[in-house]
Length: 519
Image (cartoon, rainbow, N blue to C red; front, side, top):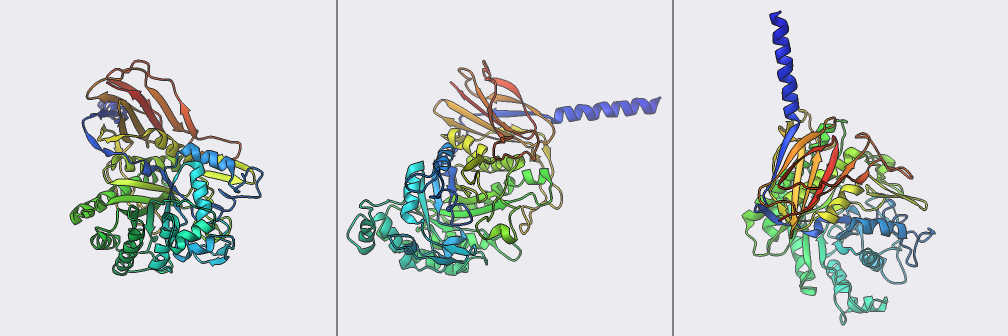
């Protein structure tokens, strides 16, 4: 009898603990402001790789293309993302790209060595600028500091930004563009720390080349912003922290951003480990922020996460070369990880001022085409939700959430080993205040259970109804396809009179956004 009572008591305590573990608190204090959210964190990336350009944004043979050969349905889908900034033309591609091959009436086909295909150069500088103007995105060009020279970099700036007079400005005018393109953002190479990069450099040699290129480029167009190639190589034997410290020390006063890259994957099919990967982005952000602060540059330096995404299925053999390269199909858990990345950018708004999802169409992309058909992948929806709503100042949100631990073998990817993570919160929360409008985004990482949380305003109250939007799907492996949308943003019932606080059950494996006026 005593054993039965003890067992019953322990069972009751366990169930009570489980119940309490699924309860949380979210406190929002509008006085605790992190920094202004830069609209450039909602950028994207177009590289001459697979079907991103040819057969993606540019497809003259398609019945849906306009007079410039641009797919109108793709343009509409891109406009829906409100893409602030688009990086071009690479990526690994840029380290053997010579921009003169892609301008003027006579184009020079080249053997493309990064992704092993013939580059016709039918689409180049002026075609990309026309595309960017049509979708309302700011162009961001990366210069070739691999096989290219500092003079080649300078001449591209002259071609794009100088109105008239010198040779390359006049060449642009001869090509039919009397007004300069006024490209503001310029990347100093790509992933120059990687042994996969053509023209790979040591940190010290990269500093020398990038510094001299920056002198020529900024002398040609003084108002441009320059982005240095930060760490991308976290494989065995690499020292990304030495690389970043060397770049920040050697290029302070010359650069405006340091670019960081990060790709993650669910290699071991461990949902909870995979959902924790954005915490590593948070950690790397804070480490590089400390390095930036240590240098005390008179020219402020910010972080640009100018390549990030989930990428692990299409990583070998034919999946990474040729016309069908890197055509990843995304599911709900991938969209949840993307939300974690976006939360990281917002949470670090004081130092992260640029981010570019890689890439835009077909190649590890939120938009996918086949023939004249198109569908929106699961990762489209969190980016759309943030880019159209998370504006203004980022708030430091207090979150009391149940937590979990990753497995001892936790890893970001096939070559990027990480450390065992403790106390990963199931609820990942960010908030933005734009005037009197408050937007809160809540990611519930729990695979099976809803988590009920009390949302508390430390000052003021909601003055009217609160709109609620949710991204979810039938299960974590749910995918979208042509004619089939399993994962998307759905508007839920508004909260009519939330006042100063309310309790909301955040569904399992979901993203929820609240939007309302406060006073």
